[in-house]
Length: 92
Image (cartoon, rainbow, N blue to C red; front, side, top):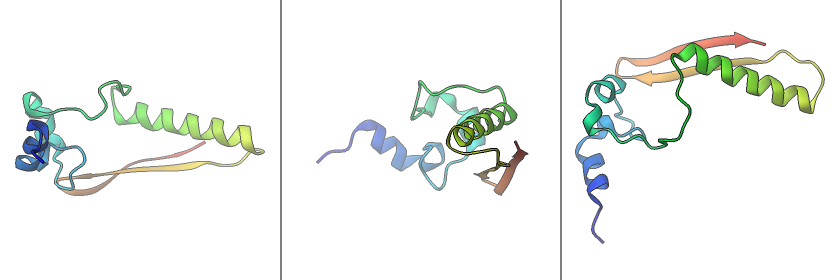
């Protein structure tokens, strides 16, 4: 079975494949003509802080609907070409 051109590109440039362990965010940002976003309809956030805030609100809302008041802590971390980075910690 032949691979699609997209699959071939992913194999040749794993640093631009969002699902690859070799994904390089800086390369993806600077070489946008070679990057295909896996979920083009996903929400766009101006910064990581907005994303963390949205995740915390959603988690707090989910927990408050299912139980009484609790402290919710969400760790958000990511992997960059320079190693793992803890992006944020929030307490609701």
